[in-house]
Image (tube, rainbow, N blue to C red; front, side, top):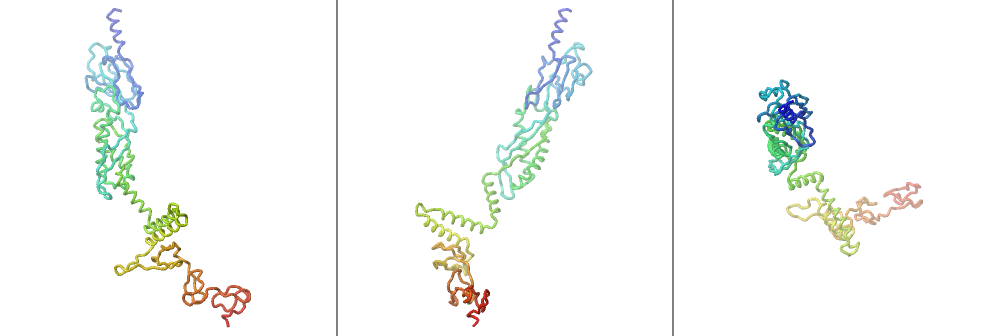
Length: 384
């Protein structure tokens, strides 16, 4: 073998024989295979794995795209050879080309969010400002188009290199979609899925020109300004209360309990209870009374306290003066049937004693007007 042949053989051994890419990262979109002087040996093996595409670039132009499989790069075997031009140095001469591996898998859990609030006209709250965030998945649908439009001659193109551009496009389409759909702010949470699908369709119209496709789009949260959320909480609280009058009475009862537990800074439990009854009675008077003014400003009706006689507003449950209970059980008079306070000894209408008569024979209590004892049958004084 001549010296010239040995030099040629050494030069040929420098050429790449196997072209493949094992991706050890999680975010690489495009990887340019390192080829010495961009010369590929005739007969080299090209291995393209699943979720990959190999793009050959010759003289600055995309020559061919290889899908998953194993290829032998030699004369007449692949369509690329018809585009690489004539081989000037014979059948065994190298092919001068660049090889880009494009990752076609789905890149998941990419985040998006609004950096500034979005203005929206809402039927319930007027003009509101919304913030939103979520996640999406994207993949390279057109490897050749992606290299032409986005990656260019970048030897190592990652998702971070296009992340900000994608986010701006997403937020723009999100703002447009939420304005067109006119979903009330109170109903947004129930429309996340429909909103995500609508936005994904709009985004893919833009991304397709870059060779990309959004496969999944999620709206995780849409939040309102704190003051609007506070108003929504208040509205929900009012709905949960139901009857406002009963709620006010319940609050008065709570105030009564708190006042009774407060010992007034050392004044003693009795004084604390007295103050609590007084405060509770006053609050109950306010919340428990009916509309008591008639004729444009006449005084409200009052009733006396059964314990101390102090006049209190009608409907009051406790006396404002002594704290005594205003509502007392009533019983009929044993003589005339008039309604009397339970425990009364004489009727306020007829003056009859309220002590029940007893049978002279067996001492059993007799009903008013009874002529015979129901126990022993003895004739009563009323039967005379």
